[in-house]
Amino acid sequence: MRVHIGLGDGFNAIIADLQRLGDVGISIAKKRFAAAGPQIVARQKAMAPVDVQDGGQMRDSIRFTAPRAGAKSFASMSFTVGGDVLLPYLQGRIYNVYAIVQETDPTLHHDGGQAGFMTQPVAQAAPAIFDGIAKDIDAEVASASG
View 1 (cartoon, rainbow, N blue to C red):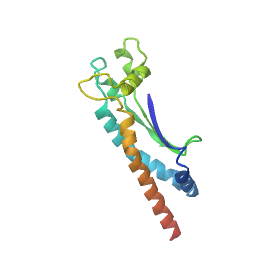
View 2: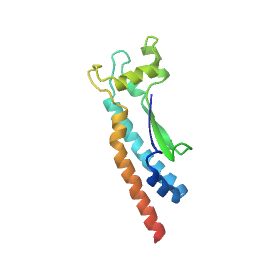
View 3: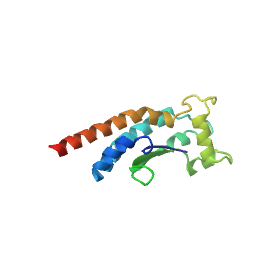
View 4: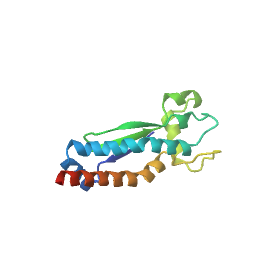
């Protein structure tokens, strides 16, 4: 399962400002994403349910993909949970389905953790990330304006 945050649709004004800055704009977005990534992963792991069946392997499989720029999104970062590490614990179930069910089913009961463990930390961090990008844009524009 992958959770993705990016500057794409809906962020046209921010993207236009970043594009006017050229490569500096991409650098600003990537820098802010890179700084936020490890903090988001820590929160995701703290919120992840630990199933007796997987012994915490799902939680431990949460990882952050370095920020990148691409054609569909001006800049983005991704968080992933699951993978082959879970196969021994799933009794033939598909690991991506397992992670999705753990993320989306609020009726599951665990001693710790909760549904939404992947998406909630990203949604909570997004406003501060975008505020930081806006501040960095303002600083860059002020510096260039002299």
